[in-house]
Length: 283
Image (cartoon, rainbow, N blue to C red; front, side, top):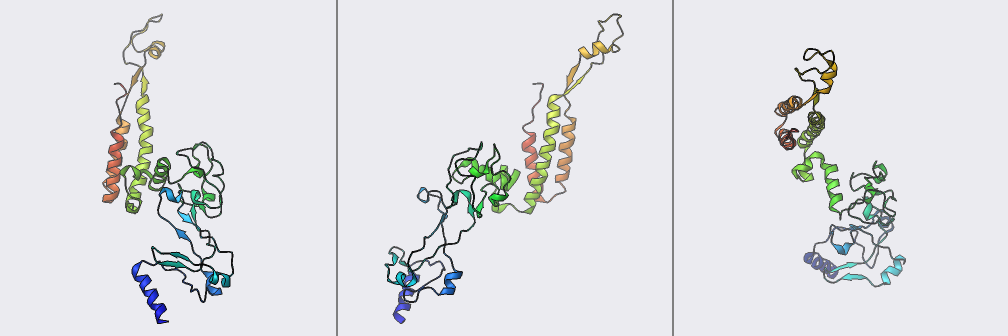
């Protein structure tokens, strides 16, 4: 017994042991432990060697407990770790591209229609973009969106995911873990402002067709300037007024001054970025 304890101590001192169900070769797992415990190996490595999968299942041995004791143990000499027992792992929540039940085809940015069997899901498949169950994703197979094709090896889909989770705050290159309630509040106000600003700015670009105050009448009989409706319709001028856009921006900036510092910073920086894109339609 002491020798066994010494061996276990030497193993744990030379490598980091992740807590899991330890079953001795002599006794094997108890029936109760076998029912309650499951083992699943999850890798954070996105290298090519993982084939893009972050979930790796351990297949159970097709032998009974007594036969397992007699079978050759799996030994990792580098980490000094011996695996003496394993069982079928439960299927944990996973991204669709990690599903071991349904095959997944990868493309960089295909949004037209589902690729292969990408639309097929199990009850634990999650949408990579929405970060919720695939069965609840409204754009799972929607043409031009097709979230079922999303995966973590594509820059296009990664950008889509960041925008879905961070919203307009993605323009500030913030980490998702750094986005708090104040920043999200400022972002929601900024989105509303951008939508309203887009409407007013488009009106400004179109302009208003207005008749000139003075024009010569060429009709018969000839009427005094400004009194002939026919000539007025022929001499309409396009007038561009930025006043409505200016008024909207002013109200938004005044609202930002009443918000928290973080929310105000998001609102002011976002507004400045949008206004900087405005142009004079007459140039």
